[in-house]
Amino acid sequence: MTSGPGKILIVDDEKDVVLVLGEFLTREGFDVSSASSGEEALKRVRETCPDIVLLDMAMPGMNGLETLPALKKIAPQMVVLMITAYRDAEKVVESFRLGASDCLFKPFDFNYIREILKAKFLPVLSSGSPGAESEHLKKYLDTSRYLVMHDGLTGLCNALGLSKAVEQELERYRRYQASFVLALADLDHFKNVNDRFGHQAGDRVLQEVASVLSRSVRTLDTVARYGGEEFAVLFPHTDLEGARVACERLLRVVRETPFSSPSGKISMTMSLGIATLAHGASNWDELVGQADKALYRAKETGRDRLVVFDAAWGRTSQQGLAS
Amino acid sequence: MKEKGSSKGTLLVVDDEPAVILILSEFLAREGFRVQTASSGARALEKVKESKPDMVLLDIAMPEMDGMETLRRLKALDPKLPVMMITAYRDGEKIVETFRLGAFDCLFKPFDFQYLRTAILGQLLR
Image (cartoon, rainbow over all chains, first blue to last red):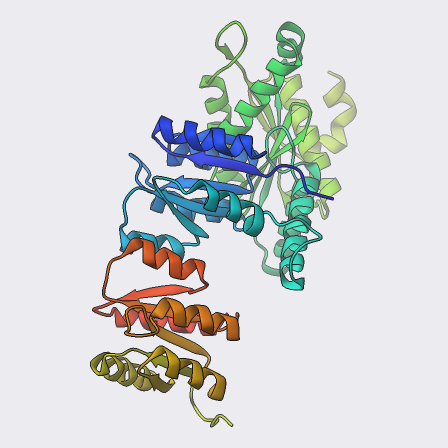
């Protein structure tokens, strides 16, 4: 049995290189995508989690040696091969020190590239020495674990991944009293997008929202796709005020971002419900239940806003929610 | 038998230039490593078979058996043996080749001793 085609991301500001390499690798059966800058590469890797990245060293803006450690931070298991036209020994060594697996010189030796990609970096499960096998099995398990915990459309954590992250934070809270905040977000009137433009267009908007949210939080915050058009953000080491400021920013960013649709740019808003440990939630279910109640309030009271969960609702919920 | 003591590990320095061997040995000994030396690739292979060092520092440009060939044979003997290349030449392609053959790092002359210390400790603590 062989594994599916490997996903390869080519990162180069020169269109010709992307074209030539892309054509070669597609013909070899790989699933190829490209990015024209380091910044774009980081975004792509977050979204699509490729197996292998071919990364040009010399690019305007964020160059290859700056992009490499950032990529490795997002996906430590990912194989990164540098591309360069210059035989600069110091940069070559630097790239290996930063975690590159190889360095390919231009003009390309396509036979070598084919050989290393197929024989070294994408070995099939049944082949190779016991060492190679366990290495591959590990990668396979890593990938399976990744797929179980992440959402296929956006590349964000899914509800399960989020619940695991929250359980970890709860543990940290029990041990070190490290406070954290959970926010649930729901796009307002998202059904209209699907109804009007179709599900593909709706999916595109969800991807764009995912990317906007990811870009607008700190690296240690976790953005998740919780369900259909529902997102969530976990803010570790954050108190209520800190999270409130961050969430106001998220509301503003979504409100001000033009999203794609078949008939041009459209605007979206979202509603947010926030829960902390202040009201006695001691597990994931209770905490997410509180955030969900707060989100419901935000929808009820006009949308495009955030509401913080308040335990007092429980006592007056009958009148409160009926009105 | 290896002597036990306060040694952080045994390093084999391979270079045909006595001055390089001297400088590196002194530095590494002062840092608390046991140091062995070899002046050629052939001698390096013998030493590795005899005394199983924890790491090898290997010059790329040597007469007769050069660093590339020595590296290839060292890795055939023991694929897990960490090897750091040493070179004065900024030959990018040759250096990439050493990484492909399994070297874990490459140190340029003149030496950055501070980096060398960090890299060796980092590798030995893996």
